Length: 186
Image (cartoon, rainbow, N blue to C red; front, side, top):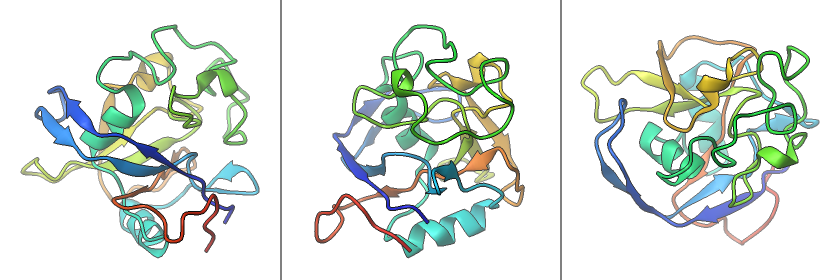
């Protein structure tokens, strides 16, 4: 596993969306990229295995509302802003090679807070604990997704047991890494 860089994002109020009620999101520490090995996103993990991997890093799978706050702060259409993506922003259908690319390949697509690959490349697991069905939600779109799937407010509900080469994980921590470090490895 590549070292994980953690970025602190201040919390705030995420507006209600199709997938969650309006709610406060705490200040959290986010992995700067989806988890990767030699720069390529780790994929093929069903949600329970992704949660175990996050736990080994002292982290967890984010909720869908937390992810939406991280991606757009409740104000951006796409993680990088309102501009429709092109090949400089994200690895999406028609804009990339048709498979996952290195997690730091699209500098123009970073969020203002410095998170990479939030839109495109691989879907990211999230949870929806406020829903009765406790469905798993994928956020961000993948290399095979149309641009609309990279929008901050978009989510796909899926069975938690699904595994795919287009689904990865960006873990989140409730507290700072101890000691503060730019790299955690398994």
